[in-house]
Image (cartoon, rainbow, N blue to C red; front, side):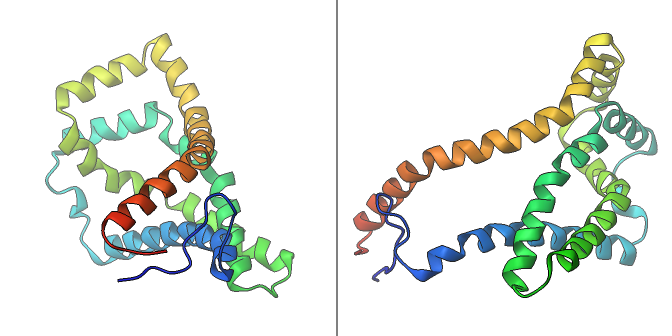
Amino acid sequence: ARLTRWENVNNGPTSASDELMPAVKGLRAVFVVGLLITGLAFISNASPAYAQDVSQRKADKIRELIKLSNADKMIEAMMPMVTEQLQMSIKANLPNAPQKHIDVMVEAMREEMRSSTDIFFELMIPQYSSLLSEETIDDTITFYKTPSGQKLAEANPHFAMIGSKVGQQWGLMIAPKAAKRAMKKARELGYEF
């Protein structure tokens, strides 16, 4: 097999399709929204037994842990990045749409995401339950009720936002090396450029 039009790390884009990368990145936000909508559809079609394997007592403790950790504020802290991704995606798919229309569409999506965060957290209950014992949940709740735990809870939304920005910086820093390594492996597998 022969690969064509590979990103030239040293000289920038090598094809017109490379110019579409911002649009592709924006599609990630649409994908996340799609997953959210799919999750909402699943819940609306399923019985409230989406956490059926978790005891009521453990589920209540997980809800308390989620609340104490400021998880809702972490999602809110991520909204500016999600908004930017949504705007890029809409602009790529509707290039002639006026900015005011794009803003209306993005705000509608944000409102829906905000209004459904409780569903997201309910979907997380089985995940927490599978990864954490009830004892660990109890200990973590106890910690979050201490002054140090409250400080960490206050910082969590900032860590989420900062982590996203640092992740983007890291990705840009390693992209050239990662691309070179991938190209080397592709050549070893018999692909030509």
